[in-house]
Image 1 (tube, rainbow, N blue to C red):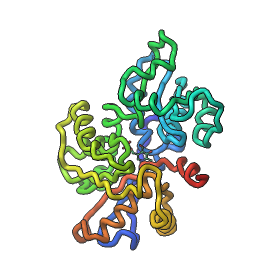
Image 2 (image 1 turned 60 degrees about the horizontal axis):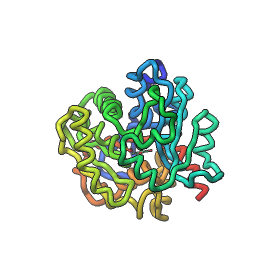
Image 3 (image 1 turned 180 degrees about the vertical axis):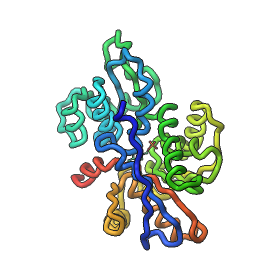
Amino acid sequence: MNFLSHSSPLQNIQSPLFPGIDLWVKRDDLLQPQVSGNKFRKLKHTLLAADPRLTTLVSMGGAWSNHLHALAHAGHILGFRTIGLVRGIPGEAQALTATLEDCRQLGMELHFVSRADYRELRDQIDHWRLWVPPESNNYLWLPEGGSSVEAVRGMAELVDEVRHELGEHPSNMIVACGTGTSLAGIVAGMQDRGRVIGIAAVQNSQYLRAQIQELLVRAEHPAYDNFDILHEFTHGGFAKTSPQLLAFCDRFFADTHIPVEPIYTGKMFYALHQLCHAGKFSAGERVVAVHTGGLQGNRGFLQS
Ligand SMILES: Cc1ncc(COP(=O)(O)O)c(C=O)c1O
């Protein structure tokens, strides 16, 4: 499967926005044109190991979900049917966001589910079966954000690539956190060396640390401790922004020519900018920031 064998460039950034550090950006936004960033890595091993009888991939997400968007593309490219369970108003005709319109055009079957059902989908492993026929043995459920042990494995490979490109083990890595799966994979790849900083995109997500360590153990790694999750850079919550954040995203793009969105990657780079100014790194310290893609989500943001 050629489609699943991409790697992404590692780019050195010289910018006054990040004083005092030696900044490298792992450009997973360039990993694959459609299945963007961390979603590609998170889906890769699940799809490579898929039972040949598997016909349909089922998952959940919000109206601007990067994960559903990536899944719809992956299904389209690899010949799987896809079903998306979307947080919304069940049974009512509703305007599709640009993300869902893309999903629909790629053949994804969309079902809107209530907030209560959405919560159940998170908490109860079999709840998704309510939306598929009873004899659907050839269906595979992917939890929210594509979180799985296979996703940890896919994300860990990113660290191998970075090590190869730098010619040494990275000492600091930084990544945005939603479910924390990407960070878990990076921590797994670091193998207890160096440190990993996660920038929480969701408010009140103090549960992440335990969730990440549990996922590491499920993926047959030790419950590594060499990571910190910073919760003070959410700008009020998931998909919330501030004028400072938006101004930073513009300035970041003007300076580096690297596009970001304000939901994950913009928050992560802005946090890194603030950490540099707060003197949290020693002079010349090397930091690898992971650009997790998700640029399609910008469309939702610009319209709101
Ligand atoms: C662009 C982008 N970056 C980062 C994340 C966070 O990844 P994770 O859920 O693995 O923490 C997500 C999605 O969740 C995302 O879409």
